[in-house]
Image (cartoon, rainbow, N blue to C red; front, side, top):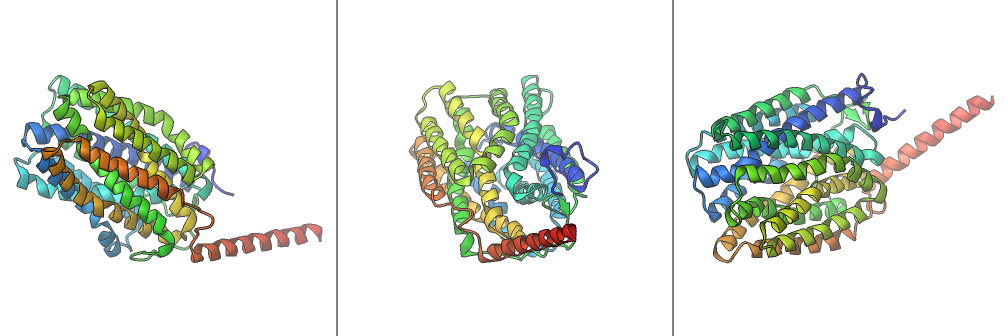
Amino acid sequence: MRTNPNRLVSSWKSPAGYGFIMLATMQVAYGFANSVNNNVITNFFADVLHFTGPQFGYMTAIREVGGLMLIALMAVLYRVSIPRLTATAMVLLAVGYALFGFATGFASIIPWILISSFGMHIVFQTQFSLGMSLTTQERSGHVLGRMGAYAQAGTFVALVLVFFIFRYALLSYRWTFIMCGVAAFAGAVAIFRFPDLHEGQLRKVAATPERIVWRRDYRWYYWLNVLDGIRQQIFFSFGLWVLVNRFEMQVEDISLLLMIVTVIGIFSSPYLGRLIDRLGERRMLQSINVGYVIALAGYALSNNVYLACFFYVVYSFIFPFSTIGASTYLRKIAVPEDIGPSLAMGVTLLHVTAVVVPVIAGFILNFVGYQVPFFIACGAAVVTVAVTHRLDPVGQRSAARVALDESLRASREALKKAADEEASS
C-alpha cells in the first residue's frame, strides 16, 4: 500500500511519517538560518565591511564555489547516506554562519563564506532527494511544495525576529549570525536519523548511486539549471542591493518586504506544488518563466520603491517552483539511483554560470547601471521558456527508466494474474 502524503503527519509512527516530521523540522531550521543570513548580509557588507558593487559580485561568486564543486564533493562522498550527508552539511552551515560576524574585512570573511557555501549547497540538493523519497512520483510536487512551506515558515519567524532585533537594536550583527548557526545545528540534529525510503516505504535493498552521472537523456534538465543559474544569481546577488543602495531601504524595511513574500509562500507553496503534479512540468515551468520575464523587466524599469518592491515580491514568490519543477521532471525520466547524482550535477551546472555571472554583472552594475544585468536575466528567462517547450517526461525517459517501468509493469501483471487464479480456484 502506497503512502498518502496527506496523512504523513497523522501517521507519524510510520517510517514516512516520522521521516516527514524530521525533514519538516530541518526545513524550518534551514529556512530560518538562511533567512536571517540573507536578510542582514547585504547591510552587513555595506555598513560594517563597506563593500562596493564589484566586491558584492566577488562575494557572491565566492559564495557559489560550493555549488560549483558540488559534483566533486558528491563523487567523493557518494557512499555516505543522504540523511548523514545532509546532517553534516547543516553542521558546516552552522559553523560558517556563526563565524560571519567575526569577519573584519574582505579576506577574513572568505573562509566562512566557503564553509557555509559547501553546507548550503549540499542541503539545497539533498532536500529534494529526501522529500521525493517520502512519496510516489505522482505526488512529488505536492510534498516538495509542502516542504517549501515549512521552510517559508522558518523564514517568516526569522524575518520577524530580525525586524525587531534591528528596529530596537537588540543584538549586534555578530550575535545575529551566531543565532543563524544555532538554528542550522538544530536542523542537523533533526535530520540525522532520517530513514532510508523509496516512495514512502523503507528500502529492502540499499541504493547504490553512481559517483558522477552525465547522460544525454537528462540534457533538458541540465539546460534548465544552466539558464536558472544566469537568471537567479543576477537577481539574488543584486536584487536587495538595488533596494538598499538605489532606494535606501533599511534592514527593517527589507524584513517587512521579505515577510510579505514569506506569508504568501507559506499558504501558496502546497497549492502550486499540486499544480505541478496536475498540469505537468512543461506547462508550469513555461508559466513561471513568463512571470520571470515580467518581474525582471519591471524591476529594471522601476523608478518607484513600491513598484520595485512589488516586482521583487512577484519574482521571489515564483522562484522556488523552478527547482521543484525541474526536480520532479528529473524523477520522471531517471532511474532512482541516478536521481541524487543528477541533482548534484544540475546544481553544479547552475553554479558554473553563477560563479562567473555575478562578477561580470557587478562591473556592469557599477559602471553602466543596475538595469542592464536585470535585462540579461530577463533574456535568460525568455530562452528558458523555449527550452521548457521541449519537455516531455514520458517520451524523454532514459532507456534504463523505460526498462525499469516495463519490469515493474510486468511484475504487477504477474501478481494480479496469480491473485486472480487463486481467487478462481
